[in-house]
Length: 109
Image (cartoon, rainbow, N blue to C red; front, side):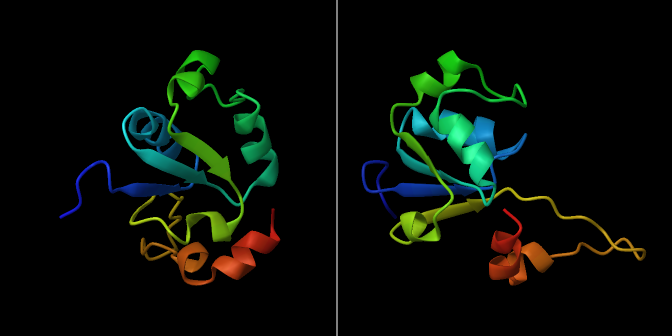
């Protein structure tokens, strides 16, 4: 098991679950917040969250957190937490397409 000093964490998806989680972890361990939405990442890098999930003070308090929309930036992470929407189909089964086909999802940003 890795010690907290050895962990490099990736939070994939910076919505209402992922962003607060990334901020909390980013206060303690090296954390990379990843999202396919480049505009969202740019605003978070600038210290602003339009969704109001995190204040500017909360974002700045996470000194070990950085944001990216580049998959290469999470390749060397050792722990991955996926916090992306999972819509359901007409049979109430989760649609995991964004997880199975990330290249297609990336093209939408």
